[in-house]
Amino acid sequence: MQSLYGAIANYKLYYMEEKKSKGLGDTVAKITKATGIKKVVDTVAKATGKDCGCNKRQDTLNRLFPYNN
View 1: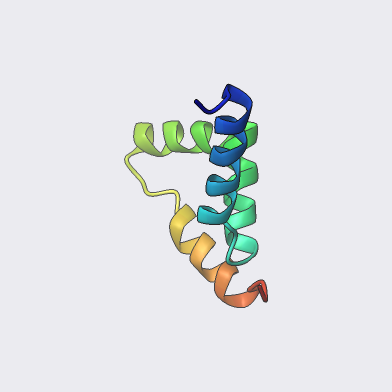
View 2: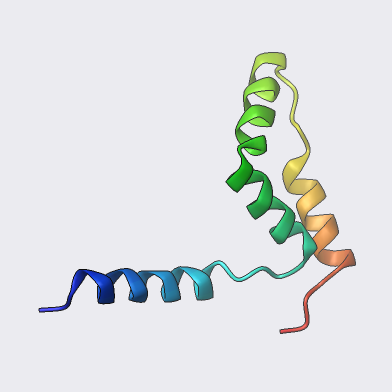
């Protein structure tokens, strides 16, 4: 039986590989999600009925500033 620590470590490795940033846009998206800014922006966008443009901005930043993995 695998220990809880081992299971957590495996999950972290899987998550880090699966969610590897392709460029600056992905990194900014991760930071805004971790700090709670994304949730505030989504709430305001939903209340106003307007798209925040986050996905388009993320794609543009990834295209302009890609990471060479």
